[in-house]
Length: 524
Image 1 (cartoon, rainbow, N blue to C red):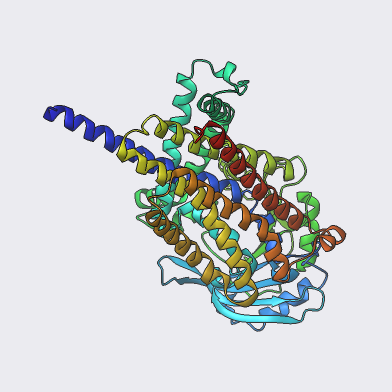
Image 2 (cartoon, rainbow, N blue to C red; image 1 turned 30 degrees about the vertical axis):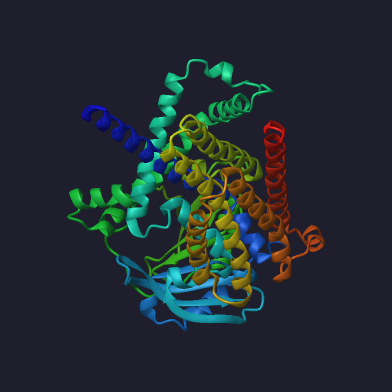
């Protein structure tokens, strides 16, 4: 073999293995993205709440003023109001402070208060992310969102990585549409029986063609969300504001250059919330009071999307007079096409704009894209199954394809245990990493196993853990199905039903494959 031929083979191998690594990363993003479409439902499932009791009541105004008197004036820069664990009212009084991990973040005092009685449940001091966002029931969903958005890589590096992957998928989706010769015919491909490989290729084609437009949408919006803050804002700040990101944000949002810090009595917050609910068409989901107790103070109310709307609503009021000021835009100070497009990026990416309908569609199409990635890699590897080097690639793909959801299922079980007895934010990411390491060790220890045996073991474990997950939730203090039906715990029924259905589906697929292998094996 000539030196030129050897060099070509090495380049082909390098190209193949780099494509495999890219496919694995895309699989991680697509699978976790499909799951986090239901992140709010996962939070409700973990918390096991019955119904959705309001946290903003007629006592909200008195509660805010009472706890404001207990917080030092220097922490009145920003007051946050929202829903806390167990249908409590979340109150946070804070001001910007350098964070040990870099950048600045609100630091102050956090209170959890019973919204009807005003009784204090807990109080602590800390950064906003360590108090308000540190809700035990959200640990699992927050971790899955982080894995999807950053691949659990800290800082902006994770956003750069997922942004590049989004651009890569966008190029692949667009070129796939352009080079596909029979795209309309393949939209209605039916599975041809008789040949396993042909049938498998038909399923891959059908899933891939139907999900192509969805792949373009997801990859574009995902790349935008990854790069808009991590790269776009620093570049604008560096070029136009000498690196001052806070000045750049203030200019883009139209914040006033001068503040009137004259001390005044803050208006009736409950009355503002009532007016905001009428204007937005939905109840207040959360609020912020900026520069509390001053003449320039403002109240921002945040509302979920109303019926027929794609996005939620933000309204701004004067905190001194209660007068309505404006509906702030994401970009600029007046409605614009750019602001509308930026506002649509997150709802279109996560599918949370039309209630259950959009979530179900996004989960279904996300599942199709995930299947397309795995089946495409399997087809590519089957054409190289006689090459000893690529036989390792097939084992690696099986470990990833079964191992990632298996590690997530293990993490969910441990999350439920630590939610009951410890700190789930501490244990959830660690258990996931340990599970991945354990699966890698298992892959090394089972090198002499056949690929079918490895798939059967991993798939059986995944199916069993998924079916057992509702049992674990119930045993750790969660709502029963009867309580969920009576008291409106829809999230419990949806997530439990999904886990059980997927678990039995995994076992059924493995059983069908075992039957096919037995039927095609030569008789002894």
